[in-house]
Image 1: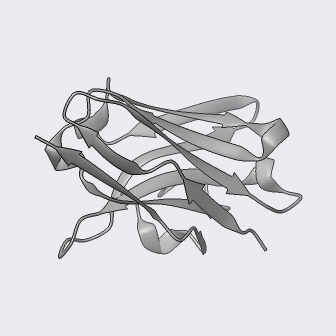
Image 2 (image 1 turned 90 degrees about the vertical axis):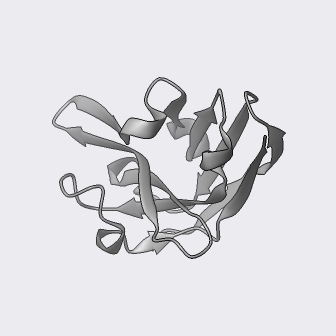
Length: 126
């Protein structure tokens, strides 16, 4: 069982930055693929970023609209993953969710993740 708690959302002007945190419980945190999704009102939950691995290698994936602006990172000692969001745009406004799953492929599909946080709201004003 994995429990996830997000924090760090808020209101920011366009061009600003926020860092989201996702604190995870569970002894096998390091063996999970971790991901961030976002959902705007009336929209589907969309993939933002993910961290997975294969053998000794770690891989990060980002949706095209955030490449170069968002960076995902992980602190194993704190069982926490982060999403650093720079150059924020009004279209980034959404509730952001952290997710964890055992899969290392099909990482962009929300239904593949059994564990979710409660979400944190990010609002970017123009």
